[in-house]
Length: 274
Image (cartoon, rainbow, N blue to C red; front, side):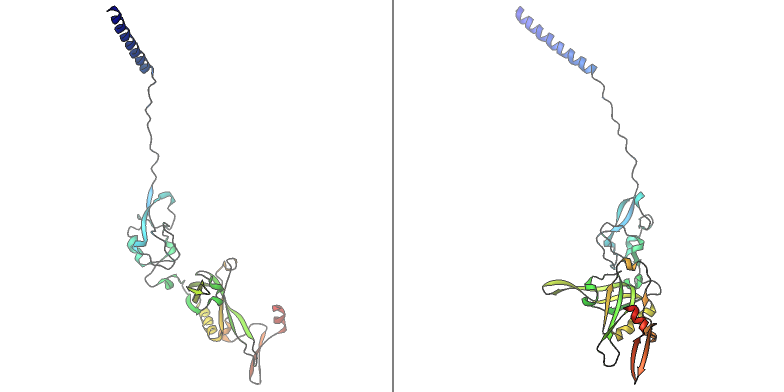
């Protein structure tokens, strides 16, 4: 009996000791610090009108092709259409035409759209300018690489007016003119797909339009030559206005002999060209 009591008492003492040690550890345990998270400054946003999908140049903007999107207010650039400034912009886009291409998610800028119900071409034409179409082909349009907004020269090729001559005369009748539109289709040729254009629409002044119209009647062929960006930085254009008046350039004289008309260059002009 004494032994059993001793065992019970020993067990109780051990349990009490363990409980005391655990209590001391809990008392000596450092108090956990309460972490307080502070929210950073709230980012101010603005509803900006963006393209809901890719929009090609000249396409009409419809309510389904644009949408509102959250945009950081600090990143809203001048020209963006915002909901605060134009709350009815989705409805107002029905008569708008894309002056340039938009990619999906790109903000709609006022500078890149034309608000007009009269058509794209008349909307993008500057005041005092005319849109004139001329027939072309891949052989006469830089192999089909001419695109809208490119700058080109127009070259006229015609048979010589000299009696009995089988020569051809070439002349640049328009320089640095802007291409407004060009109809290009994909055709199959020798088993390969090629781009074929039939008509180019050029931006001209009224007088330049007259020059092109006269050249279309005189020419056996009109060719478009694509200008590099370095050669077309300005909007200055030139035209062969002598086609309208019949006046010849300096260094050229018209000789009429026995009823035959012949344009002859002077020696100084020929030397300059050589």
